Image 1 (cartoon, rainbow, N blue to C red):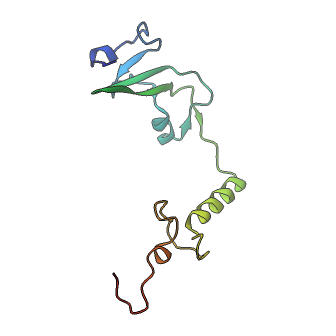
Image 2: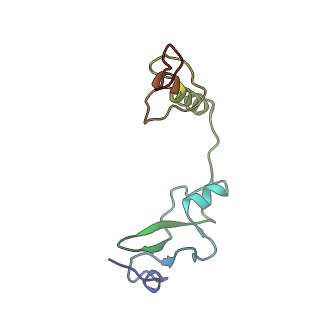
Image 3: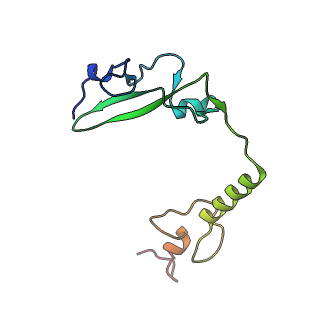
Length: 128
């Protein structure tokens, strides 16, 4: 279904079931999850207050749900256990499964190993 810009404006929610606004034209007091996060907030279990739609050519529209900023709660602080788990996960992403060393960077999924293991130099030092 191809939407026009005018079809994205439904502040009463008669057509889409939710108050709907065109992309970048949401009213004050409503924000997406990313915008809430930038403010240091989270939805906190509240219901969706609306949506913004962006029509696209030959594809379905992009949708972003809106939440009320006045009902949003602050982001929960990181606990020591979460910090340790995140450090462990990041260390696993840097460890080469072939040579078992810390590569110092996140190992690309396309290689599956560090660059030194993926492209070893020949004994004479000449690259093919």
